Length: 95
Image (cartoon, rainbow, N blue to C red; front, side):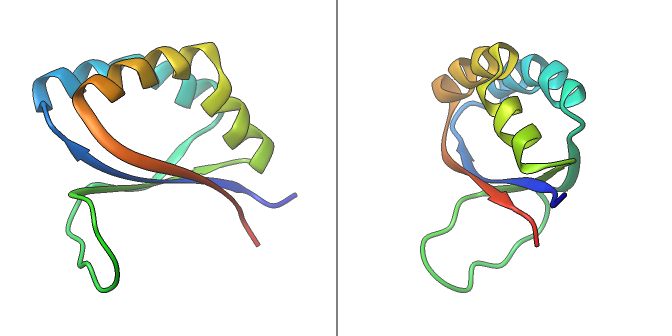
């Protein structure tokens, strides 16, 4: 079964408030087997508009990636994130 991935690009407006998102999202990530492959760090924008923070999260399957996003735990975290950051998240099935 192919793995699933979240690709998130984020501009954090309030780093202190964003810490609440990280703490609230953690149980969802743990529950659905998330493995962070990239979390912030150096990046180079080579095409199109970029964001300051780029995150790639691997899940055991595409269903696990979707279920994590739709979980009540992550939806609570999402509400916090949207107060303190702007961005996009795309769910992708692995090869």
